[in-house]
Image 1: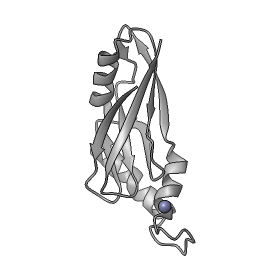
Image 2: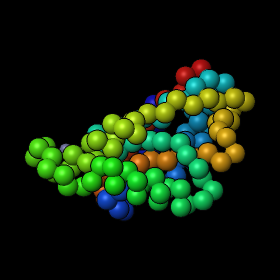
Image 3: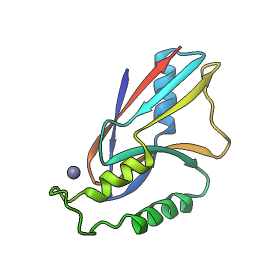
Length: 130
Ligand code: ZN
């Protein structure tokens, strides 16, 4: 398993980690197989979406923030229920294909770390499977 850190700067934020995932695949030496990208946090997630227009990322966050407001009479005493709910909806892992040593992604796809209770120092685990 390969682990890297992500330092988030905002309360909610999407951070492109495609380059870090590609580096981890290269480091692992995997030529053909699968790569699991796993976020070991309960108020963060990982998703795949458009990497061309940054307004897609802000639209995703704005709409998630509307559907799951920061404060809404939640009972969880830590005060970060919105982050927990967004994490569950988005998901804490992605399974991707590696072919000829290269990550298989669509032209407009990037892998995004999703911060839902930042700013914090976070981790991402990468496991390759031949
Ligand atoms: Zn909590």
